[in-house]
Amino acid sequence: MYKSIRGVKDILPEEASSWQKIEDSARNIFFIYGYGQIRTPIIEEVNLFNRSLGSSSEIVQKQMFEIKRDKETLCLRPEATAAVVRAYIENSLDKKGGFAKFYYMGPMFRAERPQKGRLRQFHHIGAEAIGSLSSYLDVEVISLANRLLCDFGVAGFTIKLNSLGCVEDKKKLSQILKTKLKKRLTDLCADCQDRFNRNIFRVLDCKNQACRGIIEDLQLSSDYLCADCNQHFLQVKNGLIALGIDYKVESQLVRGLDYYTRTVFEITHPGLGSQDALGAGGRYDNLVKELGGPDLGAIGFAFGLERLMLAREKVAQRQVSKLVYIISLGEAATEQGLRLLEELRKNNIAADTDYTGKSLKAAMRAADDLAARFVLIIGEDELKKNVVTLKDMQSAEQKEINPENLIAELKC
Ligand code: HAM
Image (cartoon, rainbow, N blue to C red):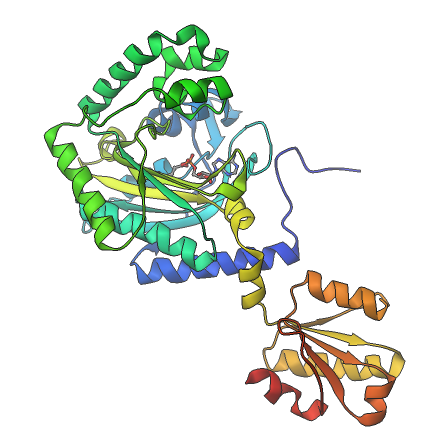
């Protein structure tokens, strides 16, 4: 028997319908905020990511799925920001108005050690706004991320915010970290001792208990920011306050990808365990130029869809589901049940039934598993009286109704 490889998942119909709800809701919100869809290829040249994410980043060092063919080295995309910027430049979108807002949804690939919320094929829902340095764009992008989460039915998340500053500020920050961490170098885990030389920012993401203690003691401030970057950060914070969006400034939030400058943010959820980031993003003001385009500012973010699914509350799912589950007991009742099933579906009401001969108790359990909003029971008694029993699964109320009134009853 063949099995799927580690860290990838089949999305079966029951789960796929929840995915579709999230995707539909995202499409709707992106439209409201003026973001148009972009679909870039799943394979790209490996150098696109080496250059954009940085050769010392964790993704490039350890997590690329590379495909070598003849003289080419391709890879399965580990993220989409670099690909969107490549597409923006390649299609000369800078010459067609310059400022452009994109969204995307699709699979990404990272050769990581799989665990809860960490897969080798996972899915991003993300947005990129290219062509502006305005701090108000940062506010829009963060408010968009916030709005998406509210619409997805995710509650209890935290928006963590920081500013890395410009390239010069980043160098200063890196130097501050080097000075502070040098004293504790031998107390860091082996990985972090390596990161200290390779990419010191990555030390701050380490989950190791000993390293976390050291990181928390660092007492970083935002002194490394130049006057312009400081002003930009202030405007972002004030803009979020004006929109009533809660955030927490976290000086240890640095993100491990080379392309970030100025604003960075991460949205975490306590229900996710050790992989607690629902999504993350930030500015990448030098990337368009770095990849051969004009000198343009840009900002974006991406959510991990699988993590959104984990954080989404069951209650929210139940409220949106209007599924009617039909339970027919006996042959004659089954015929009546199938007629009503057809009738409900013709009227665009989601409906389903059991085809495996379940008892009443087992069928009720199946309805509950499907988060059905109503259960329709047809037994011998109901047939004799020419009624059906309709149970509202939310209120637990139950009543007998004439089958001819069923559609009207459910539509109101
Ligand atoms: P990232 O932080 O690498 O950022 O990924 C964004 C989100 O994808 C994470 O917060 C997490 O929810 C999810 N994710 C990442 N790796 C995995 C995995 N192995 N399994 C499951 N979920 C995962 C980026 O990729 C940037 N491109 C975001 C961005 C867009 N920055 C600017 N624009």
